[in-house]
Amino acid sequence: MKKNDVLDHFKSVKSISKKLEIDPVAVYQWPEIIPELQAFRLDFLTNGALRYRPDPYDKQRAAKAVLKKSKRKKPAK
Image (cartoon, rainbow, N blue to C red; front, top):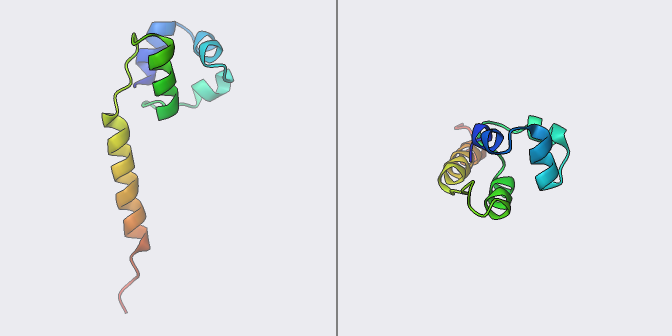
């Protein structure tokens, strides 16, 4: 779920933070793709007006797994 879509729906950071019961500072710190848990909650709280879609989060998890795997490789001697 994109941060801009959430802002378009709620019109303000204050409204978002109030709906999610979180600090507005947390909303300001969201990246372009908002945290997965918050996306899931917003889908529920808006009765599907904002839709949680797993695709962007699956891509993030896959990228993190590749990065983690590459860090585990030991250098050749």
